[in-house]
Image 1 (tube, one colour):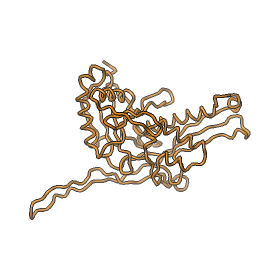
Image 2: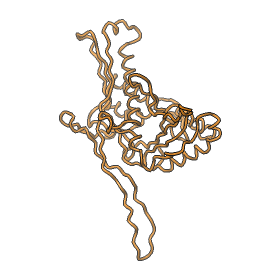
Image 3: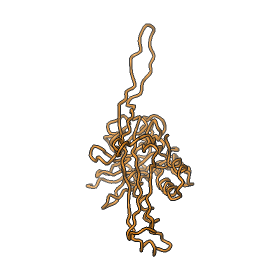
Image 4: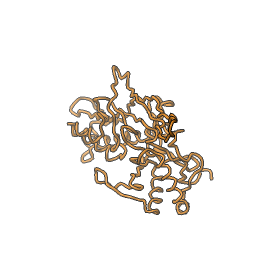
Length: 324
């Protein structure tokens, strides 16, 4: 049955597993709100980690007709699609002497929390940038899924929000465009997602126009939104050498805003049937072995069942072009 992380936590007995789930939920509004369809049966040796579904491309339309005439056929269009579960996580090695002498700073707990942040950030990165065509170990993210779709908005001319002066000049035009972008979707999105620079600028524009709203999540944190839609900073992802925005800014200074309706008929996660979405592996310090290992692992992917349930607002200029 479809579950959220909060519902998954309720079925767990281990207190550490419950703590790990809460850490993921606290650190990610997306993961806290995302529903996972735990319907994938991996089969022997993980040979069939594939989720098959039908994606609605174009909805059916209705019209009037005259007496003695027929309706013009305008069927809904759909396409078969698949997504494969991906396994991703993080690990840390800890010498037992370091752990035994760490005092109040529990080294295992510290490394566990850092691994959780790393996995969360990587999931955010894949949700936007994942591309199974170029990297087989990734699932397809929103950037690839939405390219060329009807909800990909403003692909040619940039709207400039790069400075405070530009925002003063263009915030009304930008908000008109944002409302037009949202009106092209099927229903009100659950959240708007972007990088920190863009989210900050949208908050500034919304404040100027009186559309900045605030609410609280399940942990009592203040959530800032545009007209009641939460604005979510997807943060950065450490690629092994440097930290990069999960939603990139191009050399011309433009970036994209992503909107998604999180639901089983829209944008949602997938996970193994009867298995954990997130698993934690901790060492037994009483057993032999000088170096112990901590691991956090997710088995998941995302799908979009209706292309009108998500969208990408392109060409929002948040800083000057790098060359000029």
